[in-house]
Image 1 (cartoon, one colour):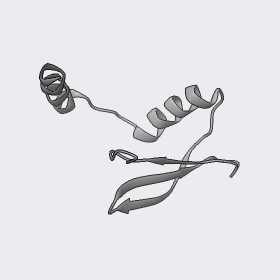
Image 2 (cartoon, rainbow, N blue to C red; image 1 turned 180 degrees about the horizontal axis):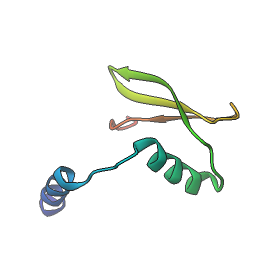
Image 3 (cartoon, rainbow, N blue to C red; image 1 turned 90 degrees about the vertical axis):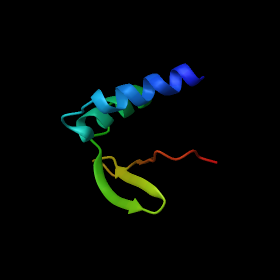
Image 4 (cartoon, rainbow, N blue to C red; image 1 turned 90 degrees about the horizontal axis):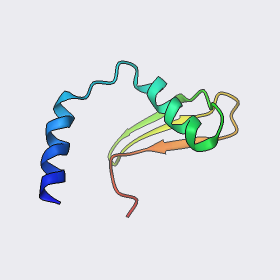
Length: 69
């Protein structure tokens, strides 16, 4: 576990996502099986969360670095 933690910390400094919303759209599209064309609806600083909605208004997706617990 310690080895994985160290590797994650090293890669966190190196990974750059040019367009985060495009990246999120690709990930969510794979999960849903079709493109959602997500748009940012709200950003919360406490607790950290990003609320995105599908372009057609049918779905909302919440992204957070925090555990659901």
